[in-house]
Image (cartoon, rainbow, N blue to C red):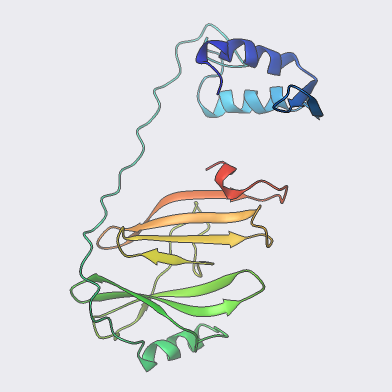
Length: 221
């Protein structure tokens, strides 16, 4: 943890530094990292945050007016959680739906959750690999009829049709997925959606395109 008062000095060092040292708990130097790209990365942050040309910029400082205020994060009101008692088994019509979508595992166990008095949400096993298992998300009526395949919203231009390693938490009305780029899960995409009563709304999206040993908890959202 670094005290906020030390921030300006640290940023100044990042601007001018060429090499950074990684210290162990005993203050022993464990290794060094090149810092040639830090200045460019911080300048990019200035531009994205609207700080370029203002006193609040990290690199691209200037005498311009203060940057625009940070916009408030959108709020999504999630639906209430109904009883999950006496959930039905998957009807044959959903197996046919999975086959029509070219799923190669339509006979696997399906997860079902009640979203409303006459609304069920199913995660049908679709395809599998060594460490990734894709599911077909489907909404049906309370008896499992009238299936409607769900396409989940993703980042702009990239909706999610088959969430990977997906799980729905009925107690919070949240659906999560973790599409691993490789087995140890240090790259790929991770998303969370919430059921808002009439749709799934994207609540969180993180991705790491390069497999560099970084756990998903440290990916930038």
